[in-house]
Image (cartoon, rainbow, N blue to C red; front, side, top):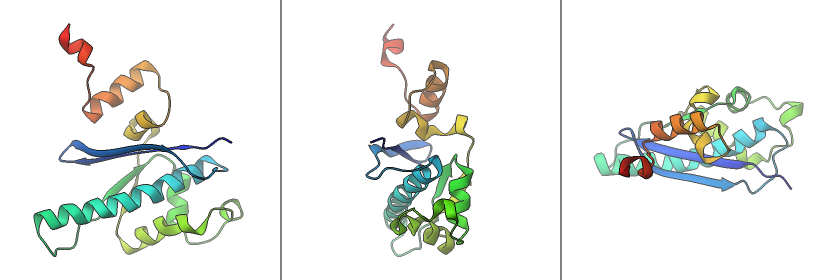
Length: 148
């Protein structure tokens, strides 16, 4: 069975504070569904992190809505549109959590072009130039280059 990989990276102050790369537990029937599942996973973590940071900064304040950068416009549209479509009726209802979070303003969904999607470094093989570009944006560097 082919299962998609979810890649998530969270930044605070321009630095990666946590990341995840894992196989999805279910087989997605489309790239839209795979992204939707990844968005639901990321939303759970993002809301928890936002609460944690909010409690560390000012106890009892409402956390600011974290922003999820997603490179699949169909997945974003599915999260924003409550209408069930024939092409999405097979998606497990537990993943509709992302729609609820978006509707409540708990998260903000933003489209980001695929070539700028930093999480791709965690999910797929990339051409060398693209890998090095994303690696630098994440704040990682090749120690071998520093030693030489």
